[in-house]
Length: 246
Length: 168
Image: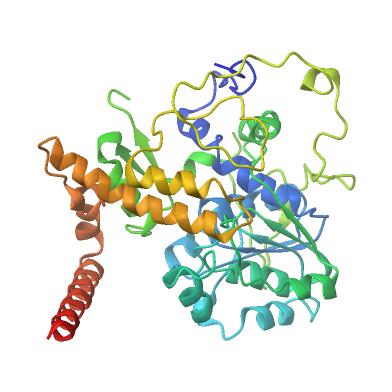
């Protein structure tokens, strides 16, 4: 197998398998979202999306010295989780008239120092984007989370994108990126690069990945597990599949 | 391991001094956009012996934008049938051509129907509700599932009625 001597990482003896399984995706992606955001000590960080990645990004933002972490979503159980686990200030965007205006008002009119899009193309929150991108599929999903990130970050701020977008067109306010001098950073997680540092964080108790696991489901029941996760049922944050005999 | 005891201040702000690890990765020189700029000889920079490549023993579709395949690739589902024809056509266009993506999206849906037909061909009745995880939906979101099913049935009934009317 090509690269088999490069890709894998040895799981330390002391590490709980539940922590290890989340180190393959959720933890590095959330951490890299915060890393790419270029957070400086005292920065206000706004994160769109309280899924496993957004919640982990909130947790990791503190490691980079954030002074304030704000999370938006519309599912109350996820906001409650982010409030405790982040910890973070959480807001339900369905209860707010205008997310961007809200962010400006809560940051003395400047906007957040950095914004993280941890949602991607499945975002709710804007009827036009939902109809165009998620129902009629005329664009590659909804770009409302990125829209809010661009418009609610300060001039000269950084927008970090780890939410998944499709390759075709989106309704993104690119003109505002120019006018505000915003830096956009985006990437798939550099898992192998980040793992040594992340393993240290788990060992030191800075990150507790397994707390995100809300469901353990036999592999044979994968269809139902996927349905629960994708439809966000039963207060699901992150399900883990268990192979027979595990 | 430290047990996290986060303290919120009276005004609702979070006291960062109570967050385990606060600021441990703060680095003014952090430049994550170029993680490999400062390489050393241990991280595979510069020249290195490229490992042997995987051999292709099935038909592979490859973007016309790339001159070579990645070192590893999947071989479990080579293109076949009508969906395969659509995918071959799609890969004649570059990824910046919308037709490339529309053909692939269409091929996925055709492939789904082909799978159902294949199941019947092997004498197996596919359990589509089971494969969609609807048992979980029934257990955790009964009203939503009923509403969605009713909506789908209603739209289908309207479509059938409209077709009948057109044929008259």
